[in-house]
Image (cartoon, rainbow, N blue to C red; front, side, top):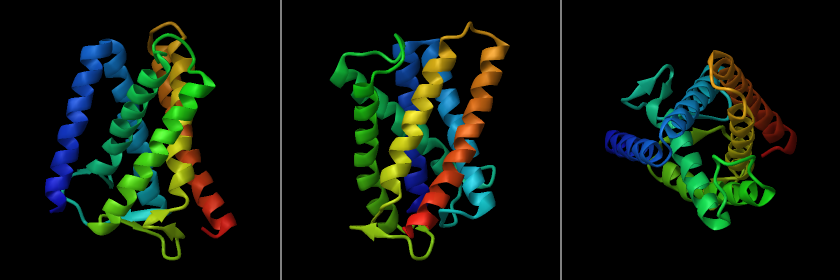
Length: 197
């Protein structure tokens, strides 16, 4: 069962990559490269630090983390971008996203948390820390975690993409994504502990 879901998620991820490249060209490929890097760093840090949650034994791995955990961020954030673009008639390519764009992307991610988390609980794929507060199988901390990572990513992406193309921009992007991924995990765990969620 888990392998089927892993492969299905990988298929959807590849389909959204293809869509991004078809729609945005090199920028779409770069966007997904950045999202994959973000997911890889974040989820491996979660596993290495043993914070927030763990996973059932899965087949496809990327480092210490399951492939599905690393790629789901890219797939999800891209869908949030597409939806926010359609709702606002803004393009992520044009300028820094407006507050309305970021709010809609964040709300989309909250809706995804309300869909993903009960499903992950149902199939026993993701295992949150003991004592994590939930309502209808949605951990409360996900309602902060999903949208906050999305907004941070979009702000960084748009800021870095305004710089001239080249190695300096790539290094800046990878460094920024690493900082965001690590601080996001540490910050969420700290907030979760503070609020006793």
